[in-house]
Length: 415
Image (cartoon, rainbow, N blue to C red; front, side, top):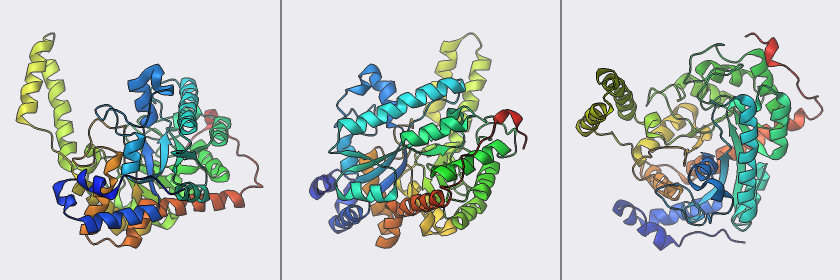
């Protein structure tokens, strides 16, 4: 079955005026993304459905959803030519770890039920070959990623259970440092991975699960790359040289990713890709703290003061060009074979101008075409690179198929 997509003319009209003037370029995007599946590394649609639809999440019509609440629906996925998606099965790292396991299982169930409800639109897959087959059949290849090492509750049996349920990657930490790995956004305790953390990576290699290094500290990045026999991924991270946020990847680590054969999939969060927005966010937080202290017990005055500050200091806005800058930087430092896309849709409070939903991916490809990107390099960015990484992990797992499962306990750990 041929992949369904919005007619070219309608897609052109949905784009900015500058893009409407480039029908030949849009035809090029259309051809490119029909030949190569566009695979995104991270989308929080399942969490958004829990937040906005509540108990209706199991039955709500997903063909068209209110864009005020959602960045994703089936119509917009088709318009954006999305051919494959790692759906995040995220739960808060603030929860007790056993509760994280329970909620992760619920998220896995939700993703699987979405796929089952729309069999003409989605196909659950586990391998690169299955992604290609789903795309050829006109379906969106659907995979899952668990976004935080706390979700295995320090137990490799839980990791193996997730793998058996179809989870394709584990992000080693989220916003909190855990008992075996340091987070990028929390105080470090281990200097990287503990011995148990390295065993987690080895067991993921044996299983064929992708090791995801978004959210982790630089020490964990280096330890995981040194430990992993398979290519690693950053499912939704950007370039630290362009935006100095600890969530981003430094240039020297980008070079290690290239040697490892891995991939950095660019995040669209304005605070991670646009340095003026990062600095503005820090200043806003500082002003909120100052006003709450200055007007203790007077919330109305603190609120009025914050409104005045925001009026005088409007939020800097990232754009499609900002996203393209990160794509280009990673391609220049690590190589065109090591960059992909991880938009973080439905997980962000704000998005770059012109990139406000999953339907807008063609705008990024148009921008890169204007910058001289070849079809071959655009195809790598779209999905070729992550498919190669998946095949690399699958090859390592085949080589390790006769190895017994790794076994270790967090309690006995030291770095």
